[in-house]
Length: 352
Image (cartoon, rainbow, N blue to C red; front, side, top):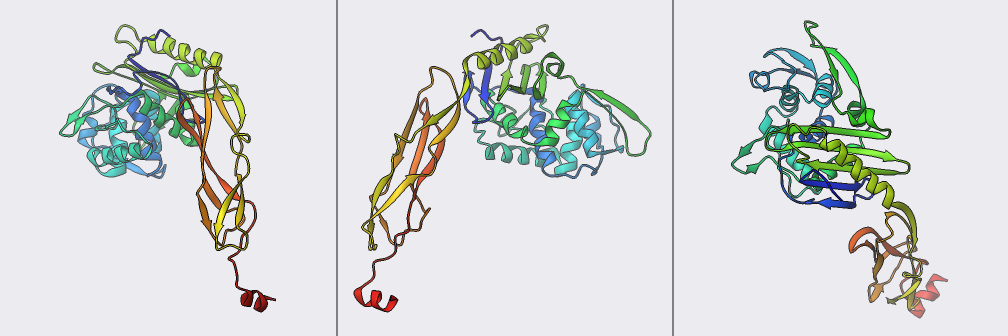
């Protein structure tokens, strides 16, 4: 596959499995795709009607910017649209300061969220994605990590609503200034099924883009870092199309029946009225997005023995389903019937 991006990922949004990767785990700056995480953290920690006062620092942000002036007041939700549709850098700083009190404190929240999502190679310094370095490192991520972040983000209905909005108008809280913002995510008008997307560019990062697109019953995440530099602004759109075409052509949902690999079993029971407990796989049918080349295998583990009492439905052991060697699903066996503790002849008489 020929791509312009120096790093790229095509992910199945349902499972989080990477279907195609190019330098998927290589660390690069990610420019304004950073704002995906900024919006996630803000949505989870603010009320929409919260009022934010612009600081001198926010007002000093370089273009692209809303042009706020120190002391002006704005609704938090209006700033979300300004940040995500037009990628305004001052709006991102106002959101960060309004949420956490400072950009530095907000970056801590961003990094904590990234860790919780399994992003091991991502480090946030700024809420707007401007190139930055501090004593701990460089503002950076990977194509794989950015795909994970977008996969999480599209689960939020308001996140999708904001990023799908084509036009939005608002004023400052005092009604002195009016603004109209327009969505710069051209993919929204290029194809159907776009759930979300965020562009980005800095001199170090190049053109970056992360999006989620629904095609039939499939939902794909595309993550691109360094997809060309000026004047090649359109490279990212051809890269997106190439990856989506690859996913659409090669992957279909399949239901995998693993019942033959995990038949009903017997496990010895210590001190039980019955010597053995019958156990059955809790789940035997799994639905995966697979290509003709994907290999599925199952590994199951049962304990050598159980201690009575054993309750019906009690989880026993583990079942793991792998696709190409990576865990795609986890389950377990469950006891079919209850097994009581063995009683003495005197206990049995008293029970009667």
